[in-house]
Amino acid sequence: MPTITQFSTRRSEIAGVSIVELADKFGTPSYVYDLNTILERVNDLRAFDTIRYAQKACSNIAILDRLRRAGVLVDAVSAGEIGRALRAGYQPSQIVYTADVFDRDALDLVVKHDISVNVGSPEMIDQLGRVAPGRNITLRINPGFGHGHSQKTNTGGPQSKHGIWHEQIDDCLLRADRNSLVVTGMHMHIGSGTDLEHLSQVCGAMEQACLKVGRTVTTISSGGGLPVPYRSTQTYVDLEQYYALWDATRQRLQDAFGHDIHLEIEPGRYLVAESGFLVAEICAVKTMGENLFYMLDAGFCDLARPILYGAYHPISICHRDNNVSDREVEAVVAGPLCESGDIFTQEEGGFVSRRSLPMAQRGDLLILEVAGAYGFAMSSNYNSRFRAPEILIENGTPKIIRERETLDDLLSRESIPQ
Ligand code: LLP
Image 1 (cartoon, rainbow, N blue to C red):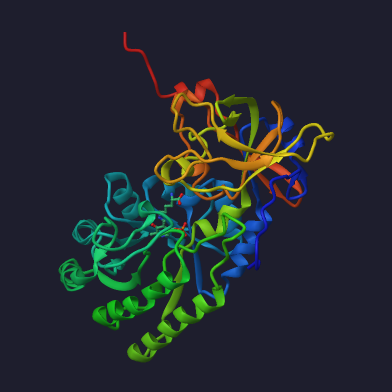
Image 2: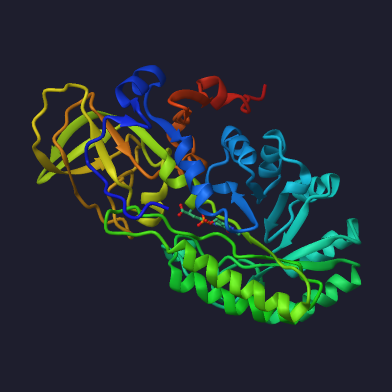
């Protein structure tokens, strides 16, 4: 785990590869990932018995493949994510389906491949038991409290739709018995991008929940939620302390049950956020009253976190011309979409803010950093824009892992009836 991250507003390379070369070769906008950073983050978490990647953060099959090779297991939240994991070479036994509902496709796949289910609603127990009795399941518990970097990423407490309410464990055990299912694991995930204080409150709630279920429990999962710094002022969670709290919880449960308890962690953001960069081109520089706008070829169709959560991403400029002044200006960074909210420098609530950035001109490159998690994964075709390519830098070599979309891709499912 690095100690501190200093973001700079100027950047000329990513993982040793020139950004100008990347832009010339792959075009803009493009997502670029540095595999080394991902693997370093994996190593930070090796103390846990299992690292299970929450692939919703970035589900490209090349990234899943590299994580699989690094010994990381995987979480899937839909039929599509199960399919991705299988295509990336995961064995069904290495996949857990975590969701609050079964849609038909997901239930079919779970049954067909005998994939473990982390149940997020009581009904799912009956649904699974009806078609696949005799299985082991885990329960995702909502402990009654939660926390996230935004209200929209808080996944615990009475306002959250996620998980099984902590007072309904008995009901779930009855349902499991009726369906000959056995509860062998317990899981809690209270939110995304939270802090150590909130993350560690889960330990006590987990212990109580496990004691209620009893000795059938052999696995506990602390969920995801580990934050990463998006600003130079933010720090990492103390992972040693975090692990120590969970390990102590595990020890207490082992003492109570008299058998080993397996400890899992399920991060998404922590593994991939810092590896990812969205490289865009400045297509226009214009003033609107007192505001200077850098207009990009990337919009919220490429990176939705600012418009959704007012999320802050570090921004840097890569000049095409080396003879540039070191002048900084206050700029608003905006995308190409026909929608006024298409602004990367905005606060929660949609208030436009300015960022101190190097003076730039049309043709210069602008990099939205720490964009690997929930970046491409939440991208869309809004305004019929083609989704950006994804490039993985491995051992200093950029490799294309998803091509830029084309008009044919965009229209491949549409037809005009006669
Ligand atoms: N496990 C479960 C059950 C989850 O629901 C999530 C995230 C994770 C693990 C991974 O959480 P992480 O380690 O990435 O914090 N789109 C939002 C984040 C939504 C997270 C949803 N669930 C964002 O861009 O911040």
